[in-house]
Image (cartoon, rainbow, N blue to C red):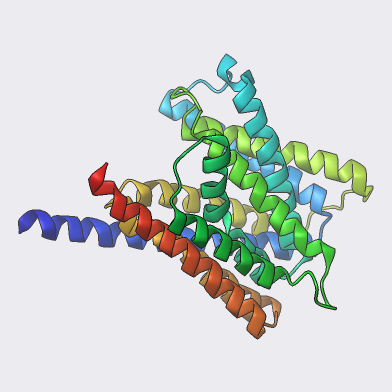
Length: 297
């Protein structure tokens, strides 16, 4: 009885950390969207990435982890870096140039693509019910995108490209050697952001603008909130059972939609809400199926 009560408290604490993490990630997106309305996207990426890599470099040093390791240059880790490059670049472009609510909604399909990728590339077993849930979830993504609608914008595909980049990164992270700790991977993740910003700046051709105090404060706030979000996520995944905590990742969609509507005056319609419901329902079903199979493993 005491064990069950302790597990219940651990689960509630893990859920609280997960919800806090998702809220912080949504707030970070809101700050970045605001700043990219005032400054060139490439400039924002470079500045935000440079500040982030400095933070993770300090964290890695405090944890005693070496940043420069030969394992970073292995085939899988280089491919992971390419995936993260496209994930970070296109997702932030989606946040900057498309409605935040729709970009956040499409990001919630990542677990579906991870499951699909695990089956295709890692040869993990997927049963018929999970296959059905994956395809239903992908149908939800199509409902959100509405490629056949008159008001469809090709820019909305940026969120999908960004999500696929994150999926590749997450799949390849499973092959990362233990010496590449979360601090080291965080350092290279933000390094990717600097490289992505430099490449986009060359392509975009817009000159950098002088920073105003308000913009600097928003970038600093985005960084602090982002570091908190990442830390809270790590705590959440190590507190309580994964099956109880993980489904609350989808709370990010609620926070993202709220910020999009309340701060950026975005409009929601029935297809958007239906697509969100389908994607979340499919993801929760897959999580429930995995949780049911755990005792038998």
